[in-house]
Every structure is written in C-alpha cells, then in structure tokens.
Image (cartoon, rainbow, N blue to C red; front, side, top):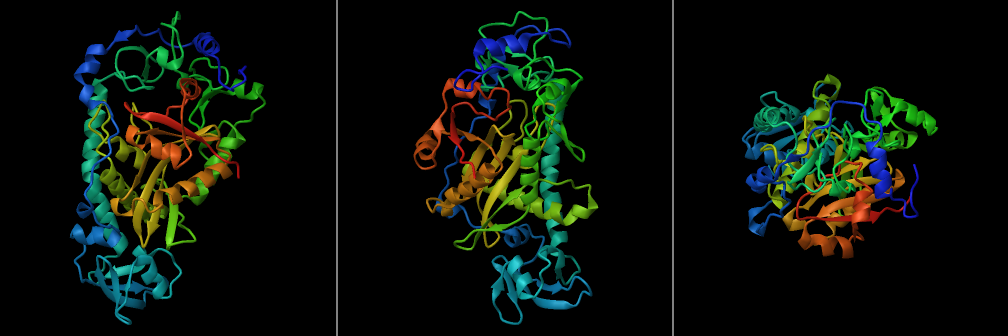
Length: 459
C-alpha cells in the first residue's frame, strides 16, 4: 500500500482499494434517511457538560455507598479476620468516613484498616466481617446486584429496539443523518463524503472501511481474522504476504507482535493500584472481568464497585449521552464494556485517580493498536477541579501509552473546552485529512465536538 509524504492514504487510492473485487451479498440501495434524522434529531448522542454547584456534590467511597444504600448500618461492628484461621486481628465500628478502630479510636479506610490489622492480603473487603456474618465483599456484591437490575432492564429494552431497527440511521463518522451508504457486512452507515468518496460507489457490493482488510482494503469475507487489540480485520494471506505473523494468546488473536505487546502491557497493570509520589494519590487501569469465573469473584466485585464510582464521577460532569437507537447511556456502556449488534465497547479501559479510596478523576481509553488511542470521556469531581488532578492522571496514562509504542491520542472536545485541551494539555485540532486517515478505526465521535490529537512521546 502506497502513502504520500504525509503518511495519509490518498482519497482516490482509498476509494479504488475499497471498491475492488467485493465478495458478499448485493449492494444495499442508497437509503434516504433525512426525514428519519430530522424526527430523531433530539436523540443524537451529544456530549454536554453538566453544570454542578459545589454544595450538590460530596466525596464517595465504598463505605459511604454501602451505608447510603442501607446495605450496611452506620455504626455496625466489624472485625478483620485472619485468612488462615479466622482469628480476629482488629475490630471496630463502620462509618461513612472509615472504620473506627477499637484499639486506638482512629478512623481508617478499608486498605488502611487491613494494614493496621497487620495483614498484607490486599483484599480488605473479603476479610472484614459484620456481626451478622456477612463480609464487606458480600455487601459489595449485593450493592452491585441492585445497581445491575436497572442496567439489565435497559439492556433488554435496547436489544428489543435494535431487533426492530435494522441499519444505523446516522453516519458512523459524523453522527448526522441524510443520504447514507449502508455497509453490507455490519450495521454501520456513512456519508460518502465523510469517508473520502466523491459519490456513490459503482459496485455490486460495498463495505465500510472498518470492515475491510487493514492491508489490501478489500471487503469482508470468511478468510479474515479480527485483531483483539486494534479490532481491525485482516485476510490471513495478506498478513503472510506482508511478512507479518499472526500472534495468539490463549483465545485471543492479534494481527502483529505490536498489538499483542500492547494488549499484554495493558492487561499487565489492569486492576493494580499504582502509587504516585505526591498527596497520597494512586492511579489504576480498570476493565470488567467475567462474572462467570469463580476464581475471579473478588476481583470482579471490587472492579465493578470501582467502575460504578467512576460512572458517578462521569454523571457528575456530563449529561447522559444517549445512543441514537436506544435509551442506553453511552458513557455507562463504555465503562462496563457492553456489546450489542450495533455497538462494541469491549476494548475500553477506565483509568482512575484515587485518594483515600475516593475516585477523583476518570479517563476512559481505547487503544486501536500502535497507531492511535482514543479518550472520548474525561471527568474530574467538582471539588477537585483546578488542582491539577486531571493533568496527573493524563500524564500517567500518556506515559504508559508511550511506553507501549502508541503514536497519538485523540479526543472529541466540547467547544468550550478546546482551548483547555490545546493550551494546557498540548493537543491540536485535527484537520479533515488527519481525521480521514483514521477512518478505518471505529472511534467514538459526537455532534458539535471538535476532534483534537496529541502526538505521544516514545518512552
């Protein structure tokens, strides 16, 4: 595949490559959806900042969530039990601000109470028990189940709606309606101009750029594999011709050693709290694990609880961002890695900055191989804004992505925040050609936002 001096595929070359030799079903007719787009205009997934008053928000950690939900009563007695023989290592009473220890009357959050008890197990919720025999892990599980009831209901409603609505009614590139090209492989729709085409393809079949082979740009067929990391499709023969060997890690398939290394690097720190050098802060990268694996029950429960706290931070900062085809909140689906016929958010991680078990700042990130990573949502609790918290989390995340060989970071900035991202964080507004160079990746975008990018330093 040839490139011009800027490294961007020429429009004519892209068009020619995408339209060659298409196997598959017949080309769908060009479908006019202008009226549909007008009728559902208010449901376009717009990204809006929520206005919050300082008095309306307060710090939240696991203990406050359990007490405010009435799963645990304030003042209840608790004890930390030894993992080997269940003898009591420390005891006290539980309150929203921490556990008040019987021996010293000092307040400790969960991890500090575990250390105070002399344990190095690093799973405090599993070993702190109430008088009624429940562990705090059991209480977390109950809280998670209560939170999940509403989410499952929404998911069912969304699935039923999607069964009734066949193809996307909005362009996958700009999220607007109008005259759309319909992909013969997936449910995506595009304006021809958004993907570098001068008009309607003169071909029996048409496949959108993300469904085409990442090397030859030809259409989807049975001889393709999907890379677990960059989520691009590749013909096995094309990989061989390019001298690239297909890598496999258990049940995961990768298009290259680069993508395999990125996946390994991200999963290697997933769920691990990494301390920073200042202000008792730490950061971690979170991703949902399977709830079916009994060996990961504790990890699942703790991760789910932490992601719920991250969602609270997002909800404090953004109004709900609804799917154009369902009532689901895009932010929630992204954080919990939900997938459906029309959306796939399994590749997202959630980076959180914490202090004393309270989530302060949140960034959701998806890495599309070594070429680009996207961060569609960034949020910081109101009372911690203008204190450099977001910058600290972004610095750590950018450093990690640079170590893994990721070239650039992109984000959809709300117009009022463009100057902040460009002047304070080193991003630049993207040109049309720069946006077009990433069209083969399914990157989240929202109407009214400005696409910005930042070249990452190699570490």
